[in-house]
Length: 400
Image (cartoon, rainbow, N blue to C red; front, side, top):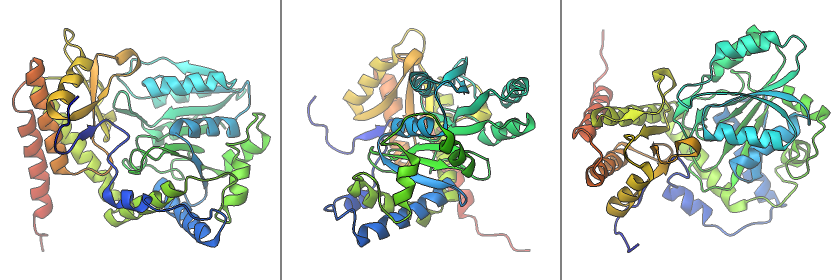
């Protein structure tokens, strides 16, 4: 592939664009990770992360790992081999988490799904109400399924668990939602939240996170899983002083400090509103193109990624190759059973209206070059919506 001038549009739903401020922060030499300067850096980061997870009561740990490492940490600390857990098939990442649970010795009940609808809280309540002996030790849910563009209602799932009067832990994957979609670890009664650095936190891959409730810490004290690198106890024993039991990813922590600062400067509520705005604009473009969304439940539309089906006589991967070759834009692939059937537009992280307009223009032109039948007004529909939001925001306040 020859050099393509200009900006490469990375519209996969992670890794996302890394802002220049974060890149400059990372471009630092490592320091002594046992010294006072490092401890000050780390303690400030933990406080910032707690504000993003929206926890004041829980603990947050950081691993040099991917989000999958954080999944493994959640399982190995909170559960024991043979424990029964309830999981839900909302897409490929739910499938992968289920596979990990089984490999680590859990008895995983995997509720089948069509990859087009979110988790049903009514089912959760009914299933847990049946479990009178409380054999189910955890409900494990993906908040925002990156492969399908489906967001499940974690607050409703917590209400379902409580309505069933069940003591199961609630464990949630927020890899593609944290710092992009409103998420409330404490308020929603989540026991373990799993996240990664490469999406809403606007960093390169390499950091995994667990936010941990007191209930989950108590469960960890009784866990029968062997663990070493991912031990919460080992982490927390040194984190309290600003250090780590292993060599940390020092330069990524510099970047994390900067990304947390950027999120607070914008304001989390503004961050969430921006992601909702971009998702709505994208869906309006898809509707004007005459293409079909993978998610069938409007209440479950993801604010961070839109998954789009191509007509049955077209291959989505071939379309993605056309988009990359002609317009220098990378679109997300269909994963698992959706391979070749969908493409995904990521709209999360360090992203603004003009970047979205350029991305949607690239998709629309690629549809034409590739010969996928589509309406010609997709970009216009998105721009009209974005303009209307900007106009509303620009209106002077009304005075009585």
